Image (cartoon, rainbow, N blue to C red; front, side, top):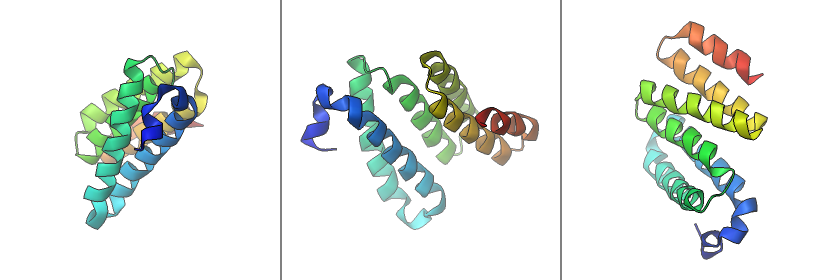
Length: 130
């Protein structure tokens, strides 16, 4: 996170980039166990900046933060916490009209439910992501 990201006026275009960077880092942490710490560190820095912008009223940040908090919980094996955050993100993104982010959260909900053996819920998450 650079000095440019500290300025809220720049955040309207940077927030989606930071979100996707953090999201991809958390996703990479699932598979690249040898680099998990490095990826998580980058993701947490991005998440910290998004939370700062959220305090300033950035319209994209609430559901971004919920998705990333879900990712972090999922990565740490806290499936119930992840499911809760994904569901909140789906609702928040839907209220704001961010259908792509809503679909992403639904897909991640499906993945999480599948991993913890909740096939019926996983199927619903995948269906909602389409």
